[in-house]
Image 1: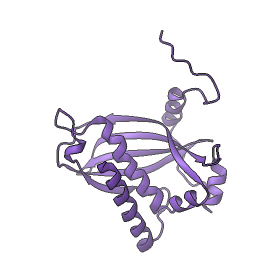
Image 2: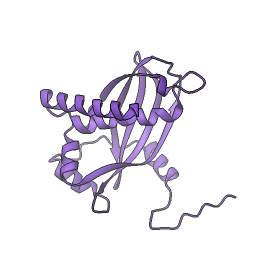
Image 3: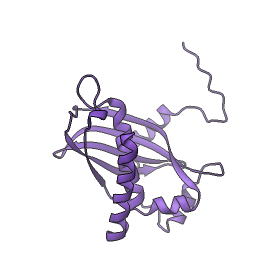
Image 4: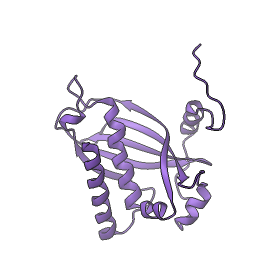
Length: 186
């Protein structure tokens, strides 16, 4: 339940920053300062590996609100969903430890937008997650990125996607929801 409160607080803070400072560029690095709470800790005394993705969501919400995309996509009946993600851990976060979630758009392909999220302490990366997200319509279907960029009144000025990101996307993809995907084990 505490992630709900953190999410609401993050969205409210981002909206205040948007009103005060105006929108940030889509290529900007968003930063949300957090602290590990007792509800984030596992039996080994460090942040539970599953909690990172939930807390990295806060960075995604902050970036969507502060770029102005949040209000735009909601007004059009669009929403973003995570299609795949990969996380790598370097160091553990302990109880009550302060850290910053850094989030940045990495690039896009013809269907998805890619983001990098990092847990950072004192300028040092503790964990990093690559996320592939798609924008969908509440009425059904994928929002083409050309339509998204046109709605934002912005050119496609995201950085070129690194080749390893495209390779990761291809290697981690599951079949389309319109194709069979039986669970069989070799």
